[in-house]
Image 1 (tube, each protein chain N blue to C red):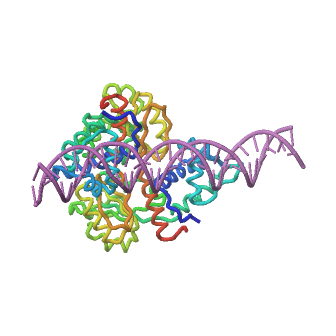
Image 2 (cartoon, rainbow over the protein chains, first blue to last red; image 1 turned 90 degrees about the vertical axis):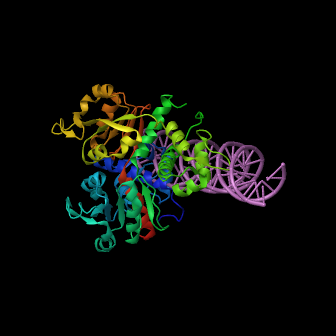
Image 3 (cartoon, rainbow over the protein chains, first blue to last red; image 1 turned 120 degrees about the vertical axis):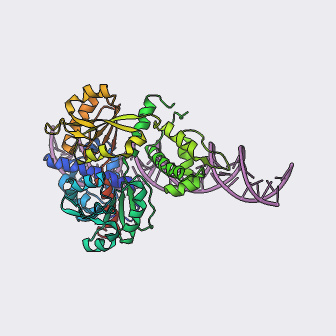
Length: 214
Length: 214
DNA sequence: ATTTTCTTGTGAATTTTTTCTCAAATAAAC
DNA sequence: GTTTATTTGAGAAAAAATTCACAAGAAAAT
C-alpha cells in the first residue's frame, strides 16, 4: 500500500497531528471533513495534507472530502498504531515517573511494561503497577516482556550507558529525553525529545522581537 | 549582527544541539573544534553547521576551527540565553511537577517562577518553593512575576482555556505539552511538544521495517 | 438532463534547505 | 621564506519540501 518512496520525517510528525485533530472531530460527532478545513485546524496548507496523505494512498472522495472514521483507521494502520507497542522506561526520575503515570499513552497504543534504573536505592520500589528493575537486567527482561521501544529518561551523563544496554537487549527503537546525543548502530532508530530545545526556540524569538540581540 | 534574513526553525533547533555538544566538549577541557568534528558529534553535515552559523555571523578561524568557549558565548548570545527567562507552568499534573522539579532548566536560563492550576483542591499546595495559584490569577501574577514564557501542561481539553488566560496575561510565548492544537493571536509564538508524536514516529518505522503495513 | 459548486489527487512551479566546491586565510613543516 | 596541511565562508548546484493550478470526479441545484 505504501509507496517505496522515502517518506519525510516531518510528514510522519504531521500525520500524528492530523490524527489528533481527526479524533477530536470524531468525538464531536463530525463525519466528513475537507482538506481545507482540516488544514485550518492543524495550521497547515491544504495541499500539504493532500500531499502527505498521497504518500500512503488515496483516502478521499472528490467533491466530498474525507470520511473521518475511515481516515482515522487508515492513518492508524499505516503508522503502525493498530498494534500495541511494549515500551520500557530507562531512568526513573521525575520525568520517568511522569511518563509512567501518564494515562494517555496506553490509549494511543503504547504500553509501558518495564521500568529500569541503575540506582540500587530505587530497585524494587513500586511505581504504579511496575517494580523498578536494575538496568543490567534489561537484556533478560526485554525478551520476557517483548519490549520493542525504549524511552531514555536518565540524566545526560548516563544516557549513553542506557543506550548501550538497550542496544544489547536487541531493542531497535529509542526515544531519548536526556539532553545528550547518543550513538547507536545504524539499524536502531533514535528520536530526540528535549524540551529545553523548545524553550530555546522561544527565547530566540522573544530576544529577536525585543531587539535584544540585533 | 543577525542578518535580516528569515532563519529556519530547524536551524534554531540544531543550534541548541550544537550548544549542548559544545558545552560537553568544554567540560571535557577541549579548546578548539572543527566543523567536521562537531558535525560528526551532532550527526549532521559539516557545511550544515557552517551555513547555520553563517546566519548569525562569522565565528571561526580559517585553517583552525572554532574556539569552543567563544562559540558557546556567541551562540548563547544570539539565542537570547545570556538572559534569565521567567516561566510559568499552567497545569500541575505529573508532567508539570516533573518540569518544576527538573534541575537542568534554571542552569540553562529558564527559571520557573509561577505554578498555576484551576483545580481548587490543588490551589495553595506547595511544589518545591512554589505555591500553586489559581489560573484565573495569571494576568495579575504575570505582571508581578514578570512572566515571559508559559508552559502548558494541562490535559488536552483544558489547553485552549489555559492558552486564553496566557494570552490575556500578555505573555507572548508558549510551549504546549498538551496533545491539542491551540489558537492564539499572530503575535504569540507557540511551540508544540508532544511525546506521543515521537513514539508514533518510532511505531511507523518499526511497523515498516517489520513489513507489517506494506 | 444540464449546469453549478465542491473538493480531491497530482503534475508543474516555486521555495526552501542541504550539500558540494573552492578561493581565501591560517598554521605547521621543511 | 616557501610549500603543504587545514579549515572556514560563501557562491553554485542539487535535493527536498511546499504550494500552485487544474483536470477529474461527485453531489446539489436548476
